[in-house]
Image 1 (cartoon, one colour):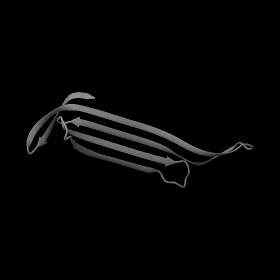
Image 2 (image 1 turned 30 degrees about the horizontal axis):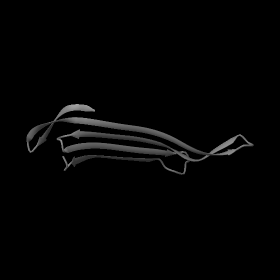
Image 3 (image 1 turned 90 degrees about the horizontal axis):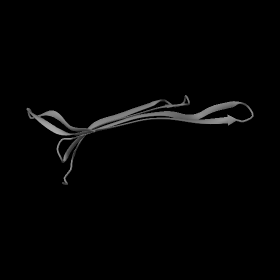
Image 4 (image 1 turned 90 degrees about the vertical axis):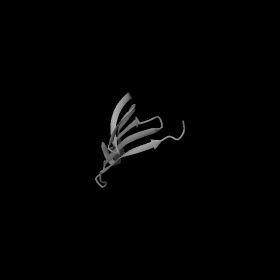
Length: 104
């Protein structure tokens, strides 16, 4: 959290300065799943399924006024599978959200 951060924006040709708190949240995760078939008599393990999952999530909120908040978000997910019959997947989403609170 960065308190009392000043930012300048240009609206209708006029520069306006906002002073508010900037909250930044970041999550990173890595998960590795594997499914095996084991033959106890023979020292033989075969992978029959599983995947490696990697995710990054970032969220930044900035309070423009007491009731107006701007948010930026970024989500990325990627997975690669342990068996060759499945293709790797990558997806991401990003955006800007403006929220106005009608209460207080």
